[in-house]
Length: 318
Length: 261
Image 1: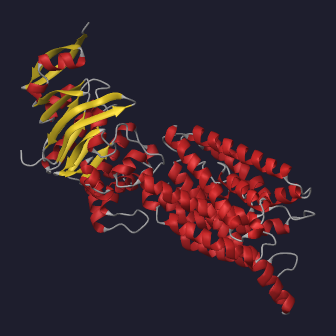
Image 2: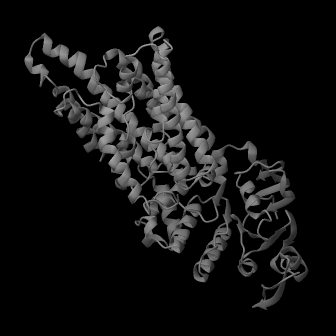
Image 3: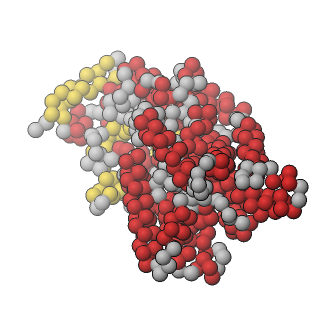
């Protein structure tokens, strides 16, 4: 299955290079064409590839770790928290003063949210406490973002930042890619080796420990990995929701519902989803291009509704 | 008994200032089935969790073959001790064979990689021992509760650990499954493992255990072969129940008859 998914991702990547106001830009055969490819299309497609990959992977990790098929960075507030931290970095001037401030703030915000969620799962296990915690984190992050914007002296700030938060990978140049990519790659490397212990956790935390899982260090490792991935992704692209929910869902039955088995396929499906969605928003006949995050929410939220309705009996213990 | 496979010394456990276990000393040998019985809240599950290294004692220690369990890493602990929790369940509708293969994680198995021959054989052996081979390719959410309990048992057996801990493995099982489970535990002891099982059914304990430990009021009320540990003076006080003591084929079978006032 992974081979086919890789082919799909490669095809969508090439399509993403080709599609836009200027189709097949390399066919222009002149400097302008190649400038479009290298300065606009390659950063955009590569960011889509990486961000989709880490969102899909984060969804799979969170679902395996929290033992819940509804866990997803956007739904449970991890992206929102990263977004808030990134907004703070913008408005404190840190982001302008120091180039790594933006991704670092995003990573810190995401890690805090993940840690809070793990606390909620530890104390009162179950879907309800997890999702309520997510609702709370989302609400707090949204309120704090509004507060920061209200305090801002710049009247254009509100529109600018809300567009940014809606999630987009338009006009991100190679500089953004260079800042965020290392964090996303390191985060992915940290969590990809944890598949065995995610498998063990499907029997619950006690049994996983009896099988040799060091749940405390695993928790730190996954918090760090998801924080790095989602934080870096959010700090360059805003909140792109539902990718982490849909990607593991599409392939879970194919891997026999084994959490560790969902990691790599889910990463590939996530990349395919974001590359595909980012290509579709370029083709939609809207006056200005639709935000990528808005599009994934439009498609993804009904998917969440369906997943919740089908959830009964889909997994054994809740 | 030669040097014990696993032992607890002066074990004290407190939870929210209440004492759960108060100075427990026990040693368990290889090749034996020990049943831990006692009324609800006596601390049976807590004792088993300490033996499995899942809880840290407030005082005292657990020794694994003479070494403090707390000083051993999670890998050695997992390799040495198989633990089957009460009402074991799974959060995902895994395939039965994958579920059982999780028992091979302490041997370094990784289910995302090709299965090694030694792991595949151990999984197959475990499935055969619980008579679960025909269930191997089914998803566990399509199985009955009894079938699922068998596979959970197979998961713990697949580790082939020298110590096997099971917390009420026969709760909510019908008599046929319960007898089968106890027979599997006896076979595990015959293989040389040290088997410690928490039970509520005193009749099964008397029939299948070499030794019975009665826990009551956070202490050991009795410890010995079934006819000693389940004697009238002991369990009546421990449970606050008057038992009728019947003997079937030479095995004592206490029957709870009347609640004491």
